[in-house]
Image 1 (cartoon, rainbow, N blue to C red):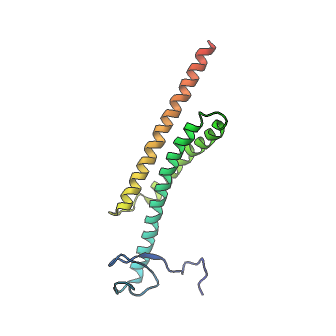
Image 2: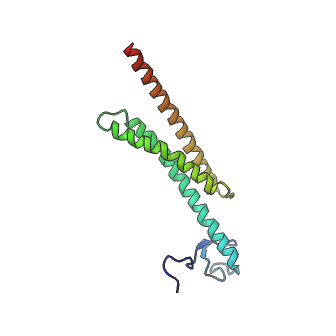
Image 3: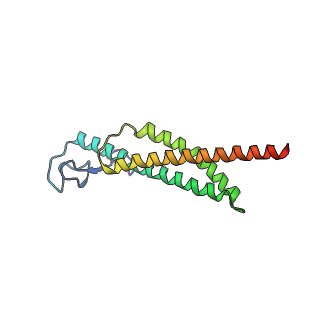
Length: 153
């Protein structure tokens, strides 16, 4: 008997013929009646899961990069600036780690779906925002250091 978390549970995927969501336990599509091959259904379900995860993680990375901009701007405010700086630095370290992980796991996926192109654009947005924020942060740190040293001379 299959447990709740066992690998024997059916996985969902979109029918290759009609595009409706079905699962790997079905012998034929309930919507269009096409006969399903169990191996093809399992492979399609695995691809669909990886595809969905890639899209979700790319969107999450874009949001994280945009939130880092907010934390950076908030770091200049009195009272909350120190906390915002800590969160900015956490995101500044975490974002490239997650970008690298996304690349290692999902860069071989190929799809012509608009959702995947959007995921790729989300990744590029995250990379650009992270790079720009890193450059701004570094420029400000260097400028502060220079001005503090000039003030001491």
